[in-house]
Image 1 (cartoon, rainbow, N blue to C red):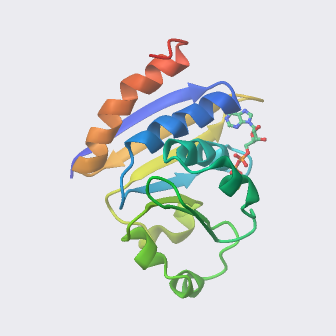
Image 2: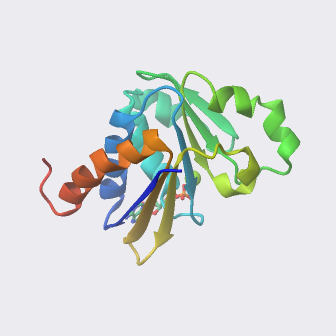
Image 3: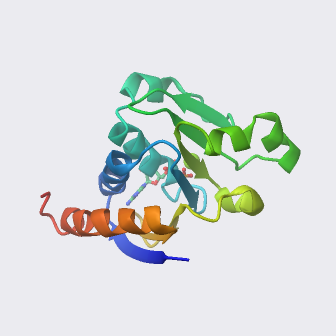
Length: 168
Ligand code: ADP
Ligand code: MG
């Protein structure tokens, strides 16, 4: 299977958010973004940018509770934001109709995706975030499948420019 990898160091929440915005702009219905990283790594921060890139209103975002497994936001396409940190068993996933969402009409962004490894499609965009300092975060993006490979080629150069201070 086609795959590609891109990694970058973000130096502020704004940079991480901006990476999310760039990814969001390129997303279309059916895309799956699987995120992993410790508590406080910046997964939600990146997804807030993703929401902006999908034209989700800030109001919708701010109102959403952070303790639920799923928040749905209306944007240019729906954003299904999953947080599987507190997921106790896989049946809970079935109950909320996880499959219908990830193979559905929106973009799925899944925090703690590795908690449900078997339920994540083989083809997806994986984002790993690792704390590398107070405000430094190493972000590694892995694309699996043709769709996501193309994706990484496009935003790879954009992200490079953001991080290097040239917001082209
Ligand atoms: P997670 O969803 O992974 O638990 P959050 O996005 O909720 O993490 O929180 C990330 C925290 O780290 C926020 O308080 C944010 O301000 C802080 N932070 C500091 N530097 C960065 C960075 N470069 N990228 C993302 N978040 C950062
Ligand atoms: Mg979070």
